[in-house]
Image 1 (cartoon, one colour):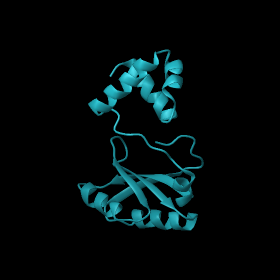
Image 2 (cartoon, one colour):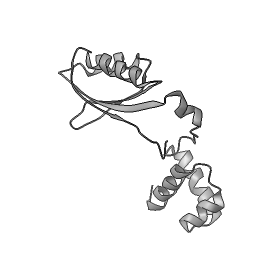
Image 3 (cartoon, helix red, strand yellow):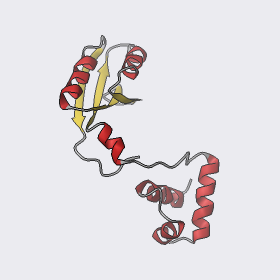
Image 4 (spheres, helix red, strand yellow):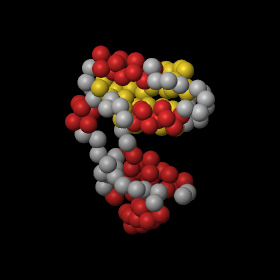
Length: 141
């Protein structure tokens, strides 16, 4: 994947429904080139699919955020399974650096969000956490 492909993917991330002619203008390429590059990226598996985020997706979880979690010892697999079974947990990501796991959480109210945080903090092996609320989503996906 070259820089042009990376620019094309960035443009598609901004608007996955953009017309080929608009993408061509933005990237200073021909429409045929844009179509061929998208086809190549799909065939190679770089682009798996396209998506849309609706108002209902956000309304389902008016309170959303992420929780970074530090885990003691070798409990990551067990804790990841426990997190995956919690209804408020939307995604569980393994990571590197200071935190072992990052969890995306969604709930209907701040009280439900806080209850989920408390439940996670009480899991055996969770030694530290830091949480950030999502205040506004400008771009998703």
